Length: 124
Length: 445
Image (cartoon, rainbow over all chains, first blue to last red; front, top):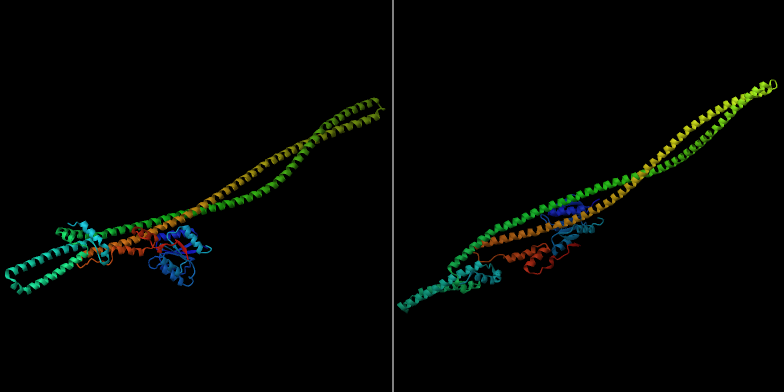
């Protein structure tokens, strides 16, 4: 059964391109356009194997979302990757502290993204 | 006479000093120069003229009268001194704002008017910059929207292409599976047919050999039967001669009379025997003829069966052709499999390329964020210019600003998200980029 990846990004082009890359990689893809909508999906019962999230988004940013996801029961350890243009050290350190699994800077080549996902998703 | 360019240069020389305490603009400097030159000229004129009047009165009316009137004169003098202090203060302030006495003194009234017109023109231009910046802001926004739409359309087209390729791959795979199954099925049937044919061939061989043996026996028998016919004729001929001899013997016996009576009986018996021999020889001949006829029929039947046997070899040729066709079919299937493997590899390569292309498309999002930041900076510039324009109309404005352009530009550094933004900023400003943005593109914690 294909593993499910939740993509969180406010950019339509990013959502669509990531959706295409991950679908071609054989993954089931769910999308949300900000952290709040992603949390709503998780609270509604979605159980993704991985979250790939942007950092700077309206309503709720990626870092805040990561903190809230890690506080949810059963969501302590599954991988969360950030994919952002943000390259500031302070933000990166905050992401690490909040529980992000890795920090990816846009743009990232599709094959590279799939390689990273295979690394953080054993058996994928 | 001081030229406007010189005044601009004078103002610009002091720009760093003024930036710490407030606005340092050419217009402000010119305004100060104009005011201070007027005040200085008129003040000097007032002091000199007052002194001259007092001196003339003391000469014409006498010192006593003048001293009597000293109170009034003192008041004037205090007023003059106060005014002079004010003038002096103004002059010092003007001096501090980089206006030299010479430059201030050389600014004429017409130049002052021209400066005021320049201020008005600059104010109008600054006000108009709002529309200019808004239009540029809108142009960037429109470009971003259009590029976003086009990139989405491009992604959709790439997805469609990939889906079509995938569907085609599926159909080819299905065809190959069907072909492979058909090949295997046909091969099984052919193998069964081969075994069947082998058994049939063995049976046919036995039958052919049997038929051939029978045919040869019949033919030999027919030859033997045919070889008996001359013997029958010989027997018949002997019987006929014997009958003639017996007839002669009877005639001779009859001629002999009683002596020949016994011989006549024998001759009669011999003739009877000859007749019976002839009759039996005829019967045997008939039977031999019948047997020969039957053998001819059997020979013809055996020949027909042998010919049929020969015809069955055509069937073997047909089966042989079928096997050959099957082998060709197997070869074609193998070729088709090789083709599908190549096509599948091509599809995978295409998918790999598409995922790379999708990565490159992310540049649109990066560009969008950078241009949105530029839009935000344009709004800051517009608001700053409009505030400046408004202050030019404010008579209470003392030339100080809450924030300068340099400070706004410096504040942009803190709002950069990308290392490339920092690099571009510092490349223009000639600074060394700080390392807060220098990190790996992929980092797993």
